[in-house]
Length: 632
Image (cartoon, rainbow, N blue to C red):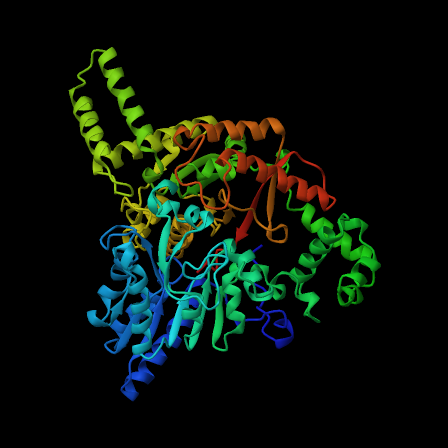
């Protein structure tokens, strides 16, 4: 079940938060909150005839703010002609026209769409000779000072707790400087550079001290992958191990985050530790599961003392019997288990897979079982996934095709010409360079053939595999375009053609590339426009390779034997281009996708067992999404 509990706003629930924190329901609200304050400040300063000095960041987190400011400039007349900007950082060395350059990113995503004068834009220079860098950094600090200091500084937070590129160990007095990047930070950036080996080892960054001198600071965070480090920055001690924690001492600092990023904060994770709460049905359910895991006792073994000793006496008081409460929660959780004998049959099912392997990684066991029980199972692969194929693998496959043509005495001239063209391109390809159209086509077909092989393995006929190749993905880069009308139209046409009764959607937000989020947006915007008579009866959200659902939100858990789990693993093996080492494994887990899937499915089963439910070998978990309210 989706957690739509009200966000607790009372001061008593904020006592552990050492930085004022605004939690929004969704990322769009985060962007709107920050953009509104920036726009208001700009308007006030314009009326007073003074400039507004902004400190800017790059990446997925602040892009919503820039898009909203662009909208207000175009539609509401927001005048940015008096704005002066200073960017946080830049990789070093870094040519300004490189795909990975923050200078280029800022132009493409903000500066080229508003009326900030060219002379008012300041971005760290990744081309300054190293011997001149110290003087350049001092001059950057001087320019900030001469501009009157930064009025509003926008920040994201890295997995190490860094702000800008101020890695753990940075001093709160540090200023703009050339620094060495932490290995974790380089790993996090690997996707943008088509591999960790291509990520620069150094960067130019504003210092922590520079940031702390801004009059107002917004630290933004989106997605559950930021929950752990954000909790440490807000509720933990001030330490250079988490540079973002230095904001605890800033009088004008504010954290603005979505529910997912705030999940680790006490008022979100276990608010009963902070004071009396309204015990909604969901809050009771969540608290009992929390107590069971906290005490290490199964749900049915919890006693009144457990409730009293863990700040849940108020929950116990509203029930005549703890045993009745325990039984109710246990039965509700038990009802989420869908054993094999209750598998539905005769339905038309459509699974949307953002990349060509998300379906089998995330719910391959469920798809195979649905096919086994005679359901008409379709899979829609929303993007080609071509950027995730190693160059060597593409060459290997192309050479195989050429050898086959020669062995079968077919005309291999076309293949030979293609092979020579691909060899020539890859032989001169620069790190991070976008593939040629020919190479992209080769890699797309590799991913397509692997997806078809996995479908066959799961019992899904090839004609029920749909390759949508959505336009937003066709950049050849890790960075993608926003979802557009053409993307929505393609998804809508498929829904009308297939007319599924059940739809599965990748609902996790930890995808490092943002592709899962964009695909979900396209699907739910299409569902909003779908005619009532062809709307699916139910929509289920599955999680990708990065993280599992929390137990209190799971609505369906499909159990498997070891044999069935291994069948799923062998389905994942069909994606040979992602085997052994994926090009974009994500920054949070070094294991292969099949290892993560195996571990996650067995851990979910073990979690259910710890709660006192029947012991299964593995489980895939799903969350039902209410069709009447598609996600933001």
